[in-house]
Image (cartoon, rainbow, N blue to C red; front, side):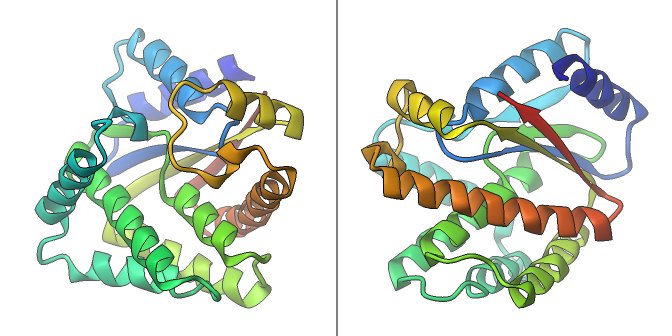
Amino acid sequence: MKSELESWLLEALKSGSRGRVVIEAFGTPGVGKSYFCDGLHMRVTENDQNLLYHSIDHYHENFFLRIISKFSLIIRSCWCRWDLFSMACRIVFGFSGLKFLIRIKLIFNFLLVFSVIQLRSKQGRSILLDQGIFQGLWSCCYYQLGSIGSKEVNSLRELICQLIESLDLELLVIIYVSASKKVVVNGLQTRAIRGSSELNSLQMDIIERGICATSSIIDAIHDVVNSHPKVKLIEVPR
């Protein structure tokens, strides 16, 4: 499956485009998205393809320096781009029951993803993200403490379609890294950079909630894929 995926990506990258090609990993925290992206980036660049890789783990370990770096990136990209700021707010406020500080954090994270796509990828260049737009939606669903209804799915589909146009995306490839709960738990126990995810507590109810959020977002992704030709989904089981 991995060789088929790499062959498909190489063909997509060789074809070139007038806009941006964004490839993002998606999956439950601990499933190995960063590990998968590290290997994929190495193998693709070995074939002389220019693929930029942006990892959430590449920021400074110090919390304040990390925030300053991310905020600077957002300012440089989203200054006078009120459409992107509005899009981030509309996505986050489309989920109910979120606490105020959680909403602020999620809006910030979406703006960071938008900024990375804006600044780190130029016209005709491709970028690989180990956490992108749909991982941000996973966070919204996780903190909402409930599944996504049909009304929310329809709203998300419309917002994602608008976002694709705003970011001038020619192709958005979502690589769904899937795994059993056992693999997720093992990944949470052994990953080198733990981050601030609640799943690091290894409490089974929290991990189950994370897996349920993944299932809900996958359903939403299928809906978007079926309605927009610029969005592709590829599953990579672990």
